[in-house]
Length: 87
Image 1 (cartoon, one colour):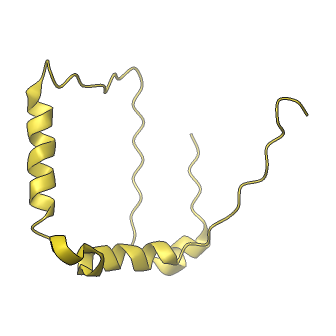
Image 2 (cartoon, rainbow, N blue to C red):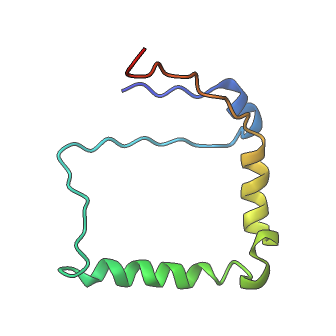
């Protein structure tokens, strides 16, 4: 596996850390009917998230704004058109 990070990323986020973990042979599907623990975990996480976000105006939340500012610094690249099956 090779991970490449553009220099531009480091210029925008000089203190960033990138971690990559590869797992093979792992089945990470969950049947909530068989294991309600995961549903409970997700429900608790969703509830806790609202402690950081004002439900009425979440787009103005400092956490959302920080993410949006960071995301907006990345240039979007148009993917090249792939040839169709009939080409």
